[in-house]
Amino acid sequence: MDKEIKLTESMEDYLEMFYRIVKKQGYIRPVDLSEAIKVRPSSVTRMIRKLNDAGFITYEKYRNIALTLKGIRYGKFLVWRDETLKEFFRLVNAGAGMDEQIEGIEHYLTPATMGIIRNLILYFRAHPEMLKELAELSEQRMYPDHERLSQLRAWLLHHGP
Ligand code: MN
Image (cartoon, rainbow, N blue to C red):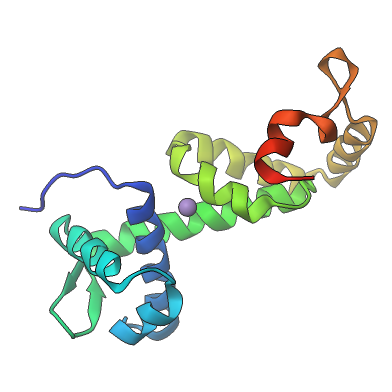
């Protein structure tokens, strides 16, 4: 039996990356990881062990890593989640800094919320005139208390001007 564990944010990021590599070339060699990840090898090893214990991958030391059926199923969802969020923000013209923000929020969205976002994409694709209306709204760029969103301090403090 696999250990029932909660996937952490970085476990999800790794599994997503593993799935992308497997989709591209069918297997993962240790060298693919050292190329894709810019962290200490010891933390990569720890992550691989965690994903192995949780039943998402199988691996033997110095050998290739394979995804289990569970790993394929979940990895596919993680890639879909990432691509769906990117598509949604692109569609509504969310602007700069999106990829970095998606990296953070993706881990907190439930499948139900992802379903709503997928529906919004389908809706806007079917009704492009609504996208124009949305763009006109954001041109006003006025928010509560007539504050200009681009000047909000909390955001600037974290991300610079
Ligand atoms: Mn992430």
